[in-house]
Every structure is written in structure tokens, then in C-alpha cells.
Length: 118
Picture (cartoon, rainbow, N blue to C red):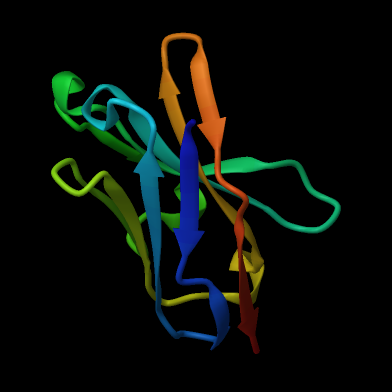
């Protein structure tokens, strides 16, 4: 059974930082591209950051809105993916989801709420 479990969300003030974690089980983690998405109320889910599998060189890409502020990383030995979020803004408020993708297989976590107050 595949499980992606996010943690680390919460309430933070403008300019603050949070680190999200995602623990993956039930998949061959090193073969999967891992990503963080977010969905704000009334908006579509959007990609925040993605890190490719180790076999794909672990290349990284970010949404323009978070470049220079967020950093994604993965620990293949621990089956973990992280999102370090700095200089948070109210517009970063959303539910953040962990995502795993390989070929036609894709899985989602249950999401963790991030709220940035001004």
C-alpha cells in the first residue's frame, strides 16, 4: 500500500519559515519523481517544486513564484522529500501536497495546511 504522509505545516508570520516533510512508503522511492503542489481556496492545484528521481539526476524545477525562497530536497535512503520555505508571504497560504510520479503511476498525500499571516 502506497502512503505519502506530509508534516510540518502550520501558522507562520509574514517573512517566516517552515519546513515541510513527506515520508513515502510502498514505492521504490529512488525511481519516483517527487513534487510539492499547493492548492489555495478557490484556486487550482499548482506545482510548487519538483525533484526528479535519482536515476534522472535529481534535477529540480520551481514555480516562478517561489524561486529563490523555497528549496526542495530528497533523501533516498530515508524515503523522504522536503520543502524548505523561507520568506513566506500571505499568498503562499494553501494546502500543500506531496506527489510521487513514475510513468503512469502517481500518488498524493493527504495535504498539510500552511497559513501565512500578515
